[in-house]
Length: 330
Picture (tube, one colour):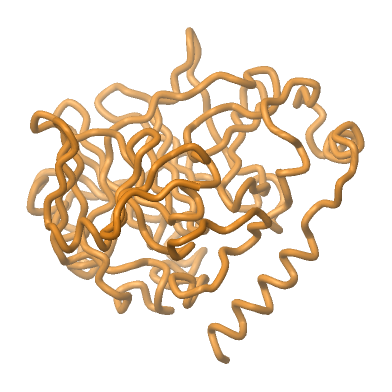
């Protein structure tokens, strides 16, 4: 099967699933049957922007009791395979995208800190949040919904809905609240084990329950338009170009790759080869090399997101993207 033709077929079907301009109350009433505990009277976004991604609530199951093995015992991963990594108080953990691709959320505790580790394949956003809010700890699952092609999570305590990009609650009791984003890296397995030889790596609880190691989004890096995205595509830059986002600023990966190190004030963004894309070929290990990015300030890792240009401008419409040709605004 031609991957690009298959991609276009899915895209057409996705657009047909997009909501029409119905009243928000009508949309909320429809969702209320599936989400009776969610307060749809409280929202920070237009509900018509939220659409079904296909799976139902928890149809993409989060990992709530994660299992890990020491780095030295891991034999399944190829050296350039991507992992989402986290280091807290010297405790290092890696969450392979071969696993995250099929679960999207891991609720974990690292060095005593409750965290939720998230990955949205459609935006290529790997983000880690502190899941404590005020005096309670939240647990997260998948709603099966998307906004701007990005994962919409929910917390099991209030069933409020949360946007993965940015970590803000957009619907429900906690609407308007924001989770604290923690520094993490999308890096190669080789890079992680070199800097954290005593770290631990996530392994599936049931290795045969999913096609771990395969990519269900074959050819996505070259797609003319992202899946389930109905907004305007960015002008003057490719929609699927990878960018590194820090706040309301982003730097195009081609710029960082060319310069190897980009500095913006006290911020340093460095690139080196050696990590493959998880969203290119059917076998993740054969993807194109997109390299490793490290974002630091004064030698310390800074919370950031490696995503696609369309996602940056969808969530930061007033942001600026730095490219080889100069700054781009929409």
